Length: 174
Image (cartoon, rainbow, N blue to C red; front, side, top):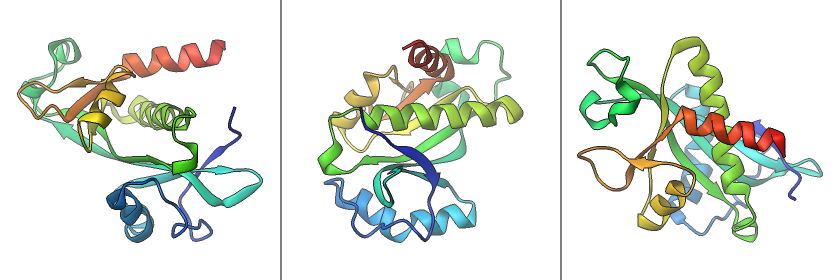
């Protein structure tokens, strides 16, 4: 099992050395993640090994968002007014190439979900909204319970908080 901890992105993290195999995700981390984090547009959290806290193993970026009521599955809107639905957008998620396939991506998804749940307990929200970069990524998110939004691109997904809570409960009992 990989030993890692989560930290807000900072100057001490070596963003240039990170490579997940997707140029756009690498470039976002290098050029925009810390700026957006400090400016408040989105928050980026990195996974680092305690033995090498400057090396980024993976990361995710998250921000508050809303989705049109008509695009959200009915079971998530049953007790809501008919206006935009509060969610948290998982804007980016990436894992360094040498660590892909070892579970860190799922752990980061769960960490993002836990963070969104903590904020939602104070200010509301029902799910993580995910814009998958391609069909392969969409299938990967669907393995964790994400589902396509209604009347949207198959790459626009939603991961209900109930699914995240169940996954957190299962992880705690292991």
